[in-house]
Image (cartoon, rainbow, N blue to C red; front, side, top):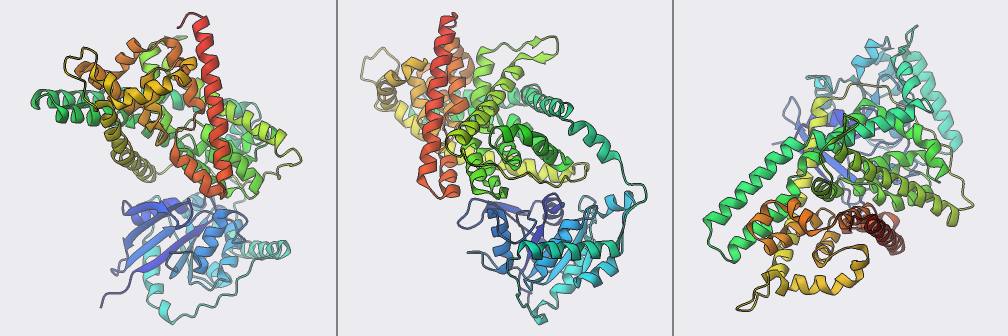
Length: 623
């Protein structure tokens, strides 16, 4: 009889190497979803032990305690206690510790022991600890804690072999071990007492080197310097945005050529008619115009994942605390806001690490202002069409510089809105002191980075194949029907439902320089920002024929003025063009009110910014 599926839970403090261990155990056998009822990313993977036991493992949010002071802590606590709705109770808990810094993890483990769950302490990054002269008496530590202890090197092939063997041994006797739960929320005094006990155990079982490693201190002397550190951070962000254009361009041109060839094949193979129009103008010009930006999306995620793995993210949060505090933000808000560069949805979900509700609410309200990857197709399309591809000062790509300016505008506007929220809504509130444990630096693991980039690229392509495709079918239908009357000399799209809707909205958008085609694109763009690019591709392809389908950027350069293009960029810095983000705000805040507040203030900012930008540009002769 085959043994039932073994359910494991990975628990640990942030930066303990939990995700690296998860990736090492499961490889590509992972699936990402949300926990039932909440919008927090849920990562589950599967692997097989040496004795053939099938295992499911869930990577729980990083936490320092089970008190439940933040939503992440609540999820981890409820999962371990077996109270999580729709989740299977874990058979075994793997408590993952950074071997170079055991203090907070040992305290967490002492708290976890009270839940009565069978447990293994995994000393991860054990090779780094040994290299730094840190010695851990594993047998004595296991005896002091009363739980099995195993070492792990998640970044090395075979580095989890001992863990897999121990998992087999413990799983064979799980059914005979009682599980008495004595856990309760600890008071501050009890937490301090638990920490003292953890410190005593560490003093007995861990020997530190007589000459501590100084590389971390040397690097921190630069990256945490009040002035030099900010310069380093600005340079990192600047390089990232330059790379979005410089590195991605060859691959984007290759993808673009592929879709052009595919469109040409459809045009020459199929007879003129609705089927040809649907495939060439709806599917290929629509969905293809978004997929070509995949290389840029990958570069953004690559930088963020590398910085996280290297250990820089926590430094950036610490460095930005003073600046963000002046705008009414907590230092912990930096990481959720930086995550919002990739997508506002995980950025908003990441605010669950912020304990105070008012700090968390402020961060949620401004997270959509950060320039997410969905804006990249819009920005790149317009910048490529209207900004010349030349270098300034001999080495800086002008298009990349404009992109950097758009990101900077999003950051500055987010800080300004946060300051206004603090001034008008939370005037009597002082943010709590910022306390953060800085992890040691470590070389990023290429396999872990590759899995992370692959997962996010797959999610982007899935979105292109579902949301964007369905919107393109709708846009193609609206732009193709009803058919023009016999003998009509104008383009057929002028008689369509899309033209009727767009021209009805055009008077509202004319003051900011938008034509009816842009109005049509903005409506389905509410589903996802990048849909606007696909919608413009479909509308102009149907209006302009084969040439327009192949070269949407050139078409925009002839149809729009520079003032309209700049107005469109200003609109997308602020506009709430993402229904999914608004839905997540509704769920995270538990209120329709804050979703409506976010939508309203962003829409007002977008219109005002576009109005000013367009009229100033016209006054300067760009109209």
